[in-house]
Image: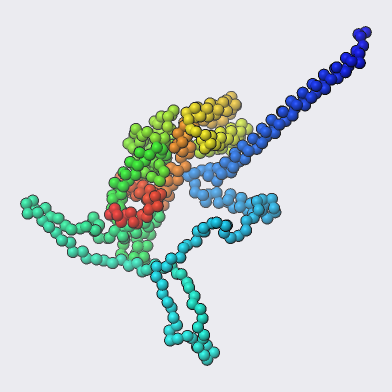
Length: 467
C-alpha cells in the first residue's frame, strides 16, 4: 500500500483544484462574452441581409413593372396594419402634418382676380331683399381656350445681282411644312407619352381645333426626329466624357427583322441606338477608347472591356441567378446558403465602400474573401450548383470594381430603367416600320426625351426650339 497523504498535502491539492476551477470559470466567461458578441454581430448582419432580401423581393426582376408585385405589396401592407392595431408593430402615427414640414400642397398665387356681384341687387326672399353677407374667396385653376390660328406670312426676298442667288427673310419660321413650332412641340409632347399616332391626331383635333391626320402626325414626328440628330450626338459626347456609364440592350424588330436596341446611360444623359446585331458593333462604334468605368450584365460582347480595370459586373443579375438556382425544383440544400452568402458579401461590400476609402487593396481583399467563400461549395455533385459557382468565380475580377473606383455603379439598374421606356414603345407598336431612317429618328426621339426629362426640361418647349 502507498503512503497516506498528509492533511497538508490534501490542502495543497484542494487549493490547486480551486485555482484550476477559477481559471476554467474565467475562460468560460471569456468564451461566453465572445459568444454573445458574435451573436450580436450575427443578429445585426442578419437584419441587414433580411432587409436587402426584403427589398430584392420587390425588385427581383428589374425588367418587370412595379405592378407585377402589387399583390405582395397588398399582403405586406395588410400584415403591417394588423400588427399596428394589435400593438405588435410600430406605434401608429397621428394623422396630419409633422412639425417643421413645409408641406406639398399647391401654392395659390392668382395671376388675376374677378369680382362677382348680384345682377339687379340682392335676391328677394320672403318678400324682402336678403341682407348682404361676407365676401367668399375661391381660387379656380383653368386653361384658356386653345385654338389653332392660321397665319399668312408675307416673306421679303432679295437677290444677288452677280450670281442670282435668292434670299428669304424666314427668321422665326419653321424650316419647312405648314405647321408652326408650338403645334409640332405639342404633338411631340403627346407622342413622348407613348400615345399612338391616331391618338395623337384625335387629341390634336380636339384640343387645338386643327385638322391633323395620322399621316400628318407621322410626317411631323419625322421632322422632329431629324432635327434631334445633332442633339442626340451631343448627349453621346457628354456620356463619353463622363467618369462612368452603364450599357444594356433589348430586342426590337425593324420591318419584321429581328434587331437590338442598346442604351448607354450616364447619370441624366441617356443615348439610344439600334443595331441589327447583338454583338460588339455598337460598343466599337460609340464606346471605343472609353476611359471611364462601365457597368454591364454578363453578356459576352461586354467582355471587350478590361476585366481587371474599370469594368463592373451587375450584382443584381448575379444575385438573381443565385436565387433562381436556389428556388428551382430539386435544388441542392447548399444553393440557398450560397445565395445568402452572396447577398451578405454584396451588403458588406456596399458598407465597406460607404464607410472606407476606396482602393485597389480593398478591392483585392474582397475578391479573395469571395473566392474563399466559394471554396465551401465546390464538389457538391449538383450540376446547377457547380455551374453557378463557376459563373460567380469567372465574374470575381469584375464584381468589386466599385470598391476601387467609387464612380462605378454596382448594378446596371439605371440603364435597364432607361431602356424600359423604349421597351414599352415596342410593346405598343410591335415593331418599327420605315427602314433604318425611321429607327434612327425613333432613337433620336427617345434619347432626347429621356435626357430632357432627367434634366427637368419640357419636351414641347425643346422641340419648338429645334424645328
